[in-house]
Amino acid sequence: MARSKEFDVNQVLRKAMELFWQQGYEKTSMQELVDYMGIHRRSIYDTFGDKRTLFLSALSHYEELITSETKKRVGSKLLVKQGIREVFNMIIYPNLNLPKGCLSVNAAVELSLLDEEIATKIAEMFTKTEALFYELLKHGQKNGEISKNHNPEVLSLFLHNSLVGLRVLVKIEADKKKLESIVDMTLSVLD
Image (cartoon, rainbow, N blue to C red):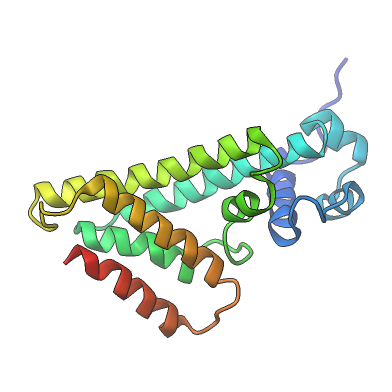
């Protein structure tokens, strides 16, 4: 008879995500994961597999959290420009109690040249963000809020690149007004 889990999988996965986010993949040991997640090493292996597989699960969990938060914040905006700004504001003013920056950007920098599967996962996540911007821009052009002189595909790439840069900068820059001025300048291309 199989034993039931004595822990909430999503709660311990969130803890793994936080630790990987704070320390990076390479600097996080299995013992630190055991201690931080509050479960036995055997339970980690039985539930998630090895450290790399746990990291991939944590990355997927991160994607789910961010996607859900983005839908809440962007979906509530009537104007496209406000919705796009809200994506940037999520970085400056996060609602979720999470480490600064971005786990996917951290993973891209640390692991994308070393692990093809992780690089592919990160590329897919980045493509989804670009697609979100693209859809918002197309909608903005359709409703007359954004000039049709803009190429929405190129502009979505530009916005995503700026977002990635902000996700890095927010880790070391505490001045919210400075960060807001960067967003203002970035979004001025929509005018």
